[in-house]
Length: 116
Image (cartoon, rainbow, N blue to C red; front, top):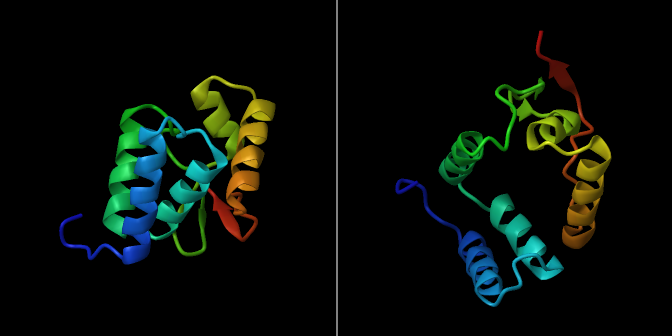
């Protein structure tokens, strides 16, 4: 990540998120919004490290369920729910709460290609 220039938007969102967590507000809608802004503005190297850490922690399925036309991996919510040991309904509820808090949509509704 040292080679990537960190944008002011990324640094501001990161600082805001860190401050909210330090205040015990890490689960608040404001923290969710700051986290989403941080991820939106993160350099690719940060995203790569975040993905690797999520994989090491067992939070992501071993392999993607599909890929976008641009080659980006796509994980089905059901696969993530299974990996986390929760129901698909619980995962949907959690995702919708996060989407409501951030005002962002995280489900890919575009063209994806299944892994065979």
